[in-house]
Length: 615
Image (tube, rainbow, N blue to C red; front, side, top):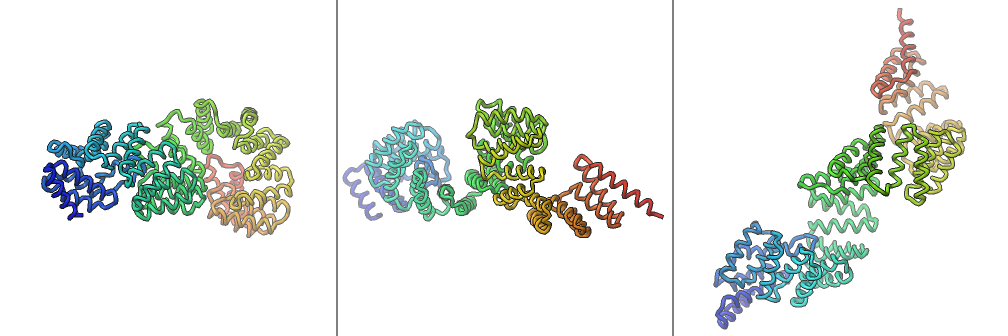
């Protein structure tokens, strides 16, 4: 290369005697070498040929020695030329102007000037510099690419495509030109034609990670995710830190339902760029889809924080996804706090108000919940049936059951095909059962809920409770079993099934159910209470006391668990310990806002016994 460069320098200089022709020759030689990926050779060619006039600048050095960007946009090729330079675009622009004042036809200076102006957002001036460079060197692919990209930035898509097509025509060996044309075609929506040009670019420049990435993106948009994954893998083979390829590979893996692989790929990407909000958000949304709510909330919260740390405002969709994950994880207070932050930034977002209403409902703030839901309904002309469902739930809790029934029946009539139709029937059945005491209507609604969604877990449990309360324990047991087929890890359902078995005098099976419920959720008081009652009625007072004592030590504070333990201690003659335990029951009641009358009556009785037994 160097020998040929020196020969070219002497040859051109001896015949023309002009600096411009020699520089143009060096530009063409170095550009050709650069297009084939030989950046070092390209720089040395430019250095040798242009050396006699000492017109090289540090910016020219950086132009050849820089590595290409990993951006996914059409502008990646335009902005990559000096990405490794420590100089600002303004500094480079001043150097280029200095060179051009001595040599107005220096192609490299014109191209660098165009690049600097591009970075500064001065589109018209950048376009003028690219046009000047092409007037001197019509086959300068860098100038062609910059011109097309500037036009793209200006929104002149047709002209940008014409410029990219001209670059492909003038320099048919340029992988960069074909890559840019492919990206522009994809942006326009012409995916098949875009793929043709990206395939050409990949053939001409097989070691360009960005080309394989762009090709993968088009394949993914064409729903050929297997081929897309292969393209992204090629890009990652060339650049393992190419986060865009890692991200899109994970997206395609998720599209093929390869969820574990997708999560692993996103984890790899986050290791490369731990503060990339897009990566964190995509991982969180997949975890949300997989119902791993706590992990989803953690990833989405990190994505929100990353946006804030970079001085940006998190997208509404990201904040809503975070709120949804917190709500799904039953973290109502955290969900409400997140939604209040969103509403502070976007006061007219109806979805945020509706979700806030649901959080407030779950935390018992019924009046505030109703206000939030009313606000959501005010902000849209087409309210979602799920919001009406939430509002009816609040009305039911406020004992406004007639109004709740009216609103539910209206939305069911207006939206018979809504995806929440089964939930609407379920709530209507619960209002009829608990609020209006109409068991017949309740059964009809619950049957409709099951018919509309045969896998609606809560519909089976609601109907099972209704049958249990009516004395149809055999019918209830079938429904409990069906519910557990749908969700075998629900502690409450396992406990209720155990109670049903107890009513059927199947004590051994009931005891096994209570033990399983305790194993599923040791902090839940109900299975300890139910187990103790079974043992007590079976004349195993010691076993009952042990069950209640275990619950009092391991479960969340519960008034009646301590009350039952105190009863057992008193009956077995340990009045002092019974008094200590019933005092604990009283304290729990006070902490929770209400002390049941029977607790105070038991306490008085135990104190009287102790007084009478004291000498």
